[in-house]
Length: 176
Image (cartoon, rainbow, N blue to C red; front, side, top):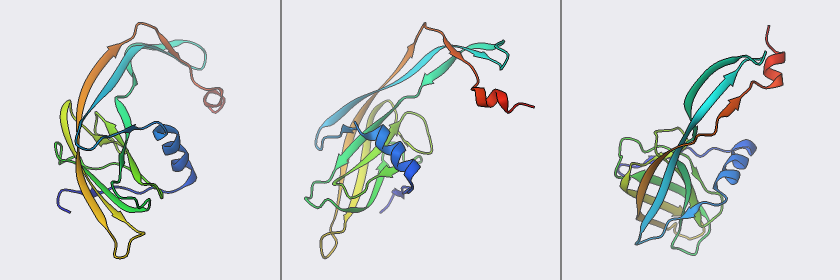
């Protein structure tokens, strides 16, 4: 399909645990509705220390990235999505990201405000997310396509609580 990039389908126990942990509570996108989603980037003062406990830096840093797992459900009864492609029509130059699906009737994608390896980049305001599924249980194979409308509200929050970052014991033990 035009303007779609096939997503990386990553396998392995580590990735499965990562995706299961993060997208277990993914927000379901509704067909025919404008899906409003808040993406919050959180900043806070961070003090960084060396292995001797000395303060090495004190600055405001991003401590939480603006992202959200979402699900897109198939409108067919077939639970076996064999292939899925997703594209953000609003940002056609940044259509890469990981799609999570394994025998379900939905896919999970990570919407992210920044251009990342794992997430699908979105912008503040209206984003048109096109999807295409190919199903495997039907003979001949069936496919479906659609568009989800996502209205992103980007928020920056500044916390006053200081975070203290100390290196791990392992890191300190391995220093020359």
